[in-house]
Image 1 (cartoon, rainbow, N blue to C red):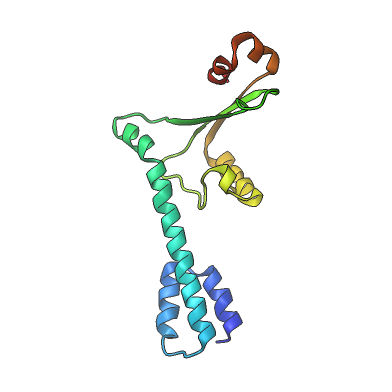
Image 2: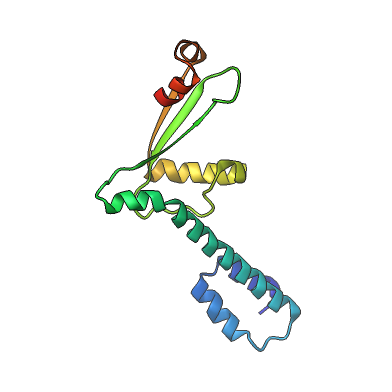
Length: 149
């Protein structure tokens, strides 16, 4: 198998397929083959760490689900820091068993990753968005506006 073919297969491989390929090519002495295996091992380790981190971030929700709560919303807001503009808040209810690879703080994600995550969330989650305009913020203060949004 050529290195380019192996690279293509490994990019699409599941963990089980990777293990099988690695066993099949264990005696292959080409440096490029071993480099591809190391890179693929790192990718799988990174993906597993992402799953673990995601599960840890859901610990709060899991605790409440165990107590019988079925619909738990995660809420966040933007716009409290700027001197002008609205306050926008979003609430998201994820379905049981939800996972999206790489979903983390949006500031740590690329634009493409954010767009893919948004598309996935829009397909499976319940999402609500609240916007409080500057005039109302001036009337009730930024803290109250954040809670209202």
